Length: 148
Image 1 (tube, rainbow, N blue to C red):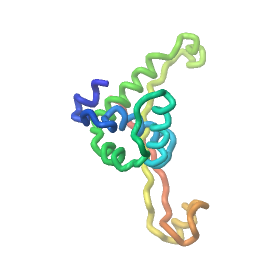
Image 2 (cartoon, rainbow, N blue to C red; image 1 turned 90 degrees about the horizontal axis):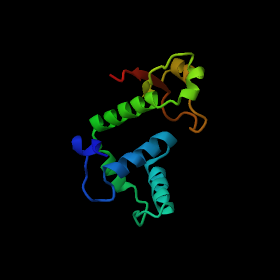
Image 3 (cartoon, rainbow, N blue to C red; image 1 turned 90 degrees about the vertical axis):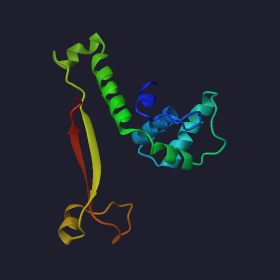
Image 4 (tube, helix red, strand yellow; image 1 turned 180 degrees about the vertical axis):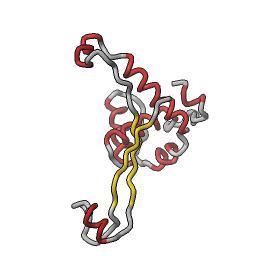
């Protein structure tokens, strides 16, 4: 993939090069798992396909390498995927689109911690997985992003 060298995200000949880091990051993002789970999944996928993989699933090198993925490269990939998704819908699906093809929308999300007030606790209760009295109320926010 020529995108990573163009944005100075090429890491050389190590196992955790830009492409392997991106693919693992993509798996981690889609599955919502930890770094360790994403690394284990990626290593297993490579081994099943008969490809080389690290001897252990220590995720420290992946985490360090992930930090070096250039944001402009990730943006270019997201835009490219959106463009290809929009232009590659087969004609047989056209009737389901009501004669129009909507643009693919990108959404960016974040979790925000809120002040620990009784009002916020009532409106945004703690998750069941958390022990009572620990942590702060939190909420998620999503923002649509323009592809241009």
